[in-house]
Length: 277
View 1 (tube, rainbow, N blue to C red):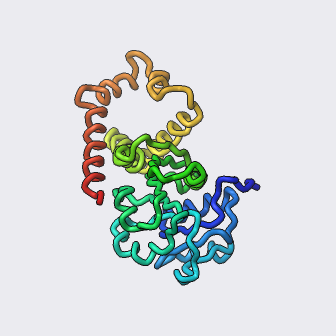
View 2: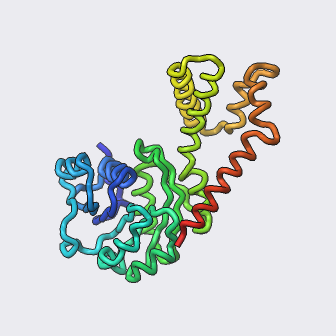
View 3: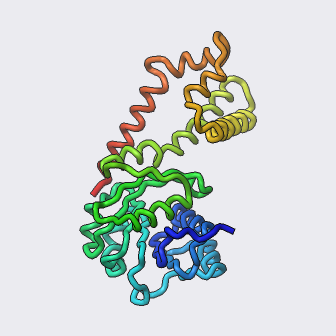
């Protein structure tokens, strides 16, 4: 059994339990957070979430008036719901409460304006592999966040993956463009590789199985080779004058994958800026 981490808060309210919120909840409970210290607020909880809360003894949707200001208030709702939800939630954010937000595009200043009593705000951008405990989060903190509260944020986000603290909140949009949106780029690679295999004459179902297994296995190989650069792993499977080298001559051309990926990340970065506020 996982021992309780001393950095975990004594009281925690999670607002929004969709895919990411539910994944975080499961991670917290697995790492030893007592179910009695956790409260979930979600206007339309999924049946499996409601069942999990009932089984584990997690409070689900109690009256707001019955909730004391917690150590940590986690915001995991859709960003466009913030203006509607904030007035009702603001009383939960006391002067000693840390607000941990995973709302894309909502800056620390935006959150401070909506939760005026809370000075300590941590803004994080996790990604969907958090659902299997393999996510990564870029994290920025307001000046009022104490070391103890940093410990809370690190423990809660670390329950679902790696945590990277950022020197400046302005980097969050770039994190969003790279790792926040990045899983979709990898899934698209698998799709594209499968379509290319089908175009080369493979049956569609076989091409898809080959593409999926290749992406899955390559990612696992990279995970198990933490001290080996991706470029080195690529070179290790590229024989001079061979088939891989022929394919890479296309992907690594001046108009190949690098400029395409830069354009894609730049587009995501621009959109993240547009969604801010």
